[in-house]
Image 1 (cartoon, rainbow, N blue to C red):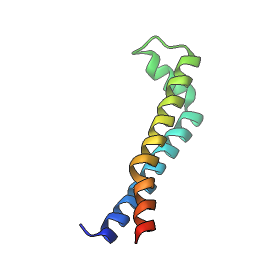
Image 2: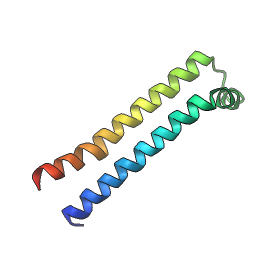
Image 3: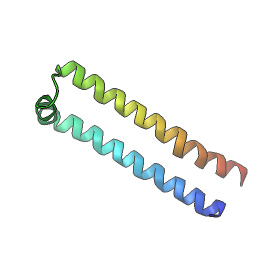
Image 4: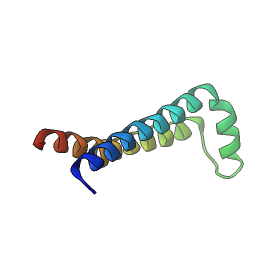
Length: 80
């Protein structure tokens, strides 16, 4: 894989992953009650705990995007 292909790959991975986290956030905002009811069928959760778990998971996902996709993409652009 050439550097150009790797830059393209990491760029598209970043775009797709930010799309995933955006859809997750919008689904969480717009369908909060339905998602909460769905998950409380399986787990005993309070609304506050459900919110905290989702926001923490979104934060970890965004950090993963930054560290594994965006930073290498920026580094490849910086050296070429």
